[in-house]
Image 1: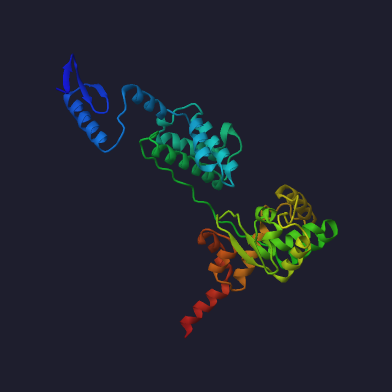
Image 2: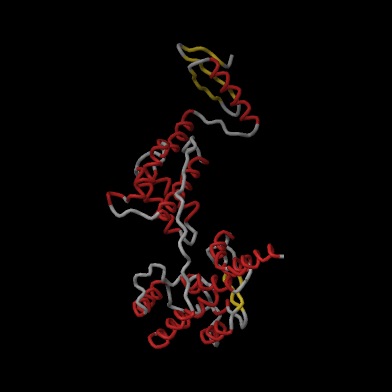
Length: 339
C-alpha cells in the first residue's frame, strides 16, 4: 500500500520516475498529495523531493533589497528612467527594511510607507504628492513582481494621492523675443537650440540624441522617445534654417548638437531666467518650450489627436491638459444652440 501509518503520521511512498516519500499529519492530506503528485507527473510537471522543496521554500524568503535588485535587473535596467526607478525602489525598501522578508508585508506597512514618503524620512523635508505617487508606483511594481513569483500570497490596496492640476506655463511671444535677444548676444548656439525646441516640441533629451541622419530638408525623426514610439515632425522654416547650419557637410552619425546636455542648457537657462527677473517662477524651465509648442498648436485650432502625434504623447490624457486653451472651439460649440 502506498500510504502507511507510522506513529502519529501518515507516510506516502510512490514510484514514478523515481521513488518519492513524504509524511503528513492526517491520512486525508497524504491521499491528497498522492493524487496531486500522480496528476502532476502525468501532465509533465516536476515533483519536488524533500530537499528540493526546502530549497524552493527558502527562495520565497527574499528581502526587500533583493526584490528591488531583481525588479531592476528584469524590468527597469534598460529603461530610460532606470536610475529614477532604482532610486525610488530602494527608497521604499529602506522604509520597509532592506533585510526584512518580503513575505512579512502587511497593509499597515504599505500605509506607513505612504506616510513616511509624504512627511520625509527621519523628519526631513516632505515630498510633493507627485513624488509620493512615483515612489508608491515603484512599490506597486515590486509587489506585483513578488506576487507573480509566489513571494507574496496576499492582495494589498495601494491608493495613489490625487495630484492638483497646475496651470500650464508657456512662453509668450514677448518672452520668446527677450530670450532669443539675450542668447543672440551671450551664446548664439543656445538661441538656436531654443528655436528648434519651441518649433518642434522635442524633449531636451530627444534633441541631444538627434543625429545628422535624423534630419531631412523638411522633417526630423525621433527614434527613441519617452512614449516608446518613433515619430516624424515637419519642420518650420525657422527650424529648417537652424538645423541646416548644424547638419550641412557633417557626418551622418554625428549628433546635431554635439556636447550639449541638460546640465549645460540648465546653466545658461538660469542666466536668462535671472536676466528676465523670473527666478521665482518655478515653472520657467527649459521644458516650458515644449509646453509652448503644444499650446500654440492648440490655440491655433490644431486637433488634439494631431498635437498628440506631434508631441509624442503615449496617452491622449496628457494632451488633454491643453484642451482648455482652445476656447474658440467651445465658443463655436455653444453657437449651435443659437441656431
